[in-house]
Image (cartoon, rainbow, N blue to C red; front, side, top):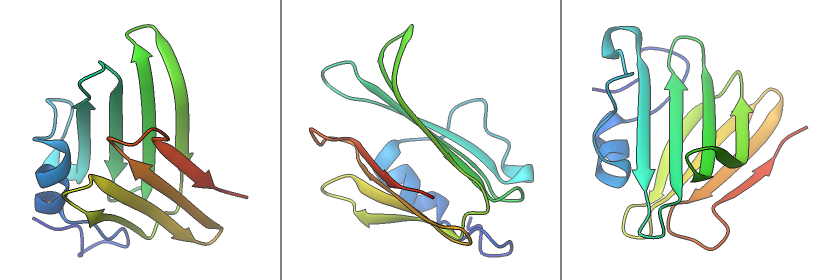
Amino acid sequence: MSGSDVDLEFDVADLVAVLGEPTSLSNPDLLDYWFEYRRSDDVTVTLSLSGYQRSVAVIVRVSESVVACSVRIDRCDAVRVLESARRTLEVVSSDPSARCFIALDGETIVVATVP
């Protein structure tokens, strides 16, 4: 399934290949997807996207009660897998201009350029 029938471009199959299956919070009928990726060091990266609302959130947790980073971008244009093998993604928006680079297994997990 793809989000190409709405303004937010994404490919669920590509996201599943990198992040694993969507969580039970997902509602494919509403194009709402939640993904949770747990690293070997127990850092958890959550990606939440809403196809109809064109919003994406990235949450990095170092423990169950400690959030290290949280980024939300509204009016997104696309969520793309850049390199599956390296587990890298990007979230982009043109109005306003914003980009969030996510390296799930990287030392620096999230780099965001937002206004």
